[in-house]
View (cartoon, helix red, strand yellow):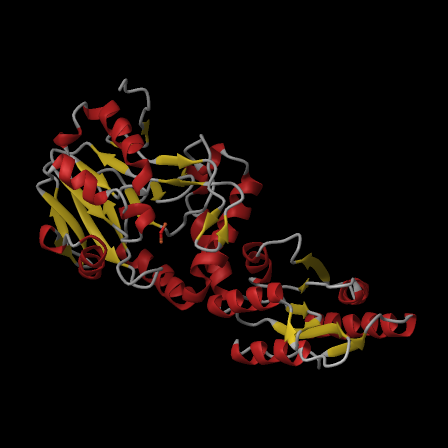
Length: 402
Ligand code: FEO
């Protein structure tokens, strides 16, 4: 096959050799509206080193990009696997079989995880935080970042190129032909990075804060941060991803609410509209999100750092609506903090949904802003005035919170 796919130069000795997955829309429950990239990097040191691989179906694409730089991929001496999740390791067994590298490095937990995936543990070399390996004319050091976001996760650093390979950290699901964040639309970059943090890393906010505290102590001179998804960070934007993470991990509540609901015959929707307007009337910001129009991943991104989460559901067969159960289950796993909670809904005769929503709030350890609000069948004008006032109470609580 003609080799037409090219690598992209990152530094004088580091090349991007990954793959762009333009049409990915589903990533284990996370709706990836703008696709993604699987970034792999080729380091032209004396020991030619491949940092991470790609999702299995993209292996040939990666190998073509490798070949565009070094001709024969068998020249690769070392492979470093920073993260065992299969969007980065899926191609690893096939690449190892083809290239026969001298060594493949992973964290201690990475060796175990890769062995459990592919039964290749005996071919791997474990490295620990602070360990330095020689690449001949360059070196590489490692920092294990356990539970950011898997037990095996680690980041690697080459001082001679001033480049930090941060695996999923500081990344985003964004398919783009432009390699660097500063070449892309700033608003899109922030939106997708925010969405990525909310959907993948929010539950590990304490580990994020610890890493942000520990990284500067290592005094790493960094010109480029090279994540495993989306664009790379450099120049004037180099500090941007750390600033974003510090803000999002702190989860300081903003003066805004997110009203999330599903509706059966539009009664719960009418309540949502009135509650949203009530919140708005206080001066607090508010976003109303129907689960027919918004994905659970959009909701997760909106809820992160919100002042209040207001959830509405009809009762169907004595249960909350399936779409509402879905989003609450998803949010519970992501563990948003410092968000006031409220629930509402229309019902016909039994009306269990609102109590069930509050049970989920309790399981999420979210403080209730107000008691739940239920309305029978179709809201009257007086009912809608109650909903508006309910929104006012929520808005006032948001504004009063620190
Ligand atoms: Fe991009 Fe956790 O894998």
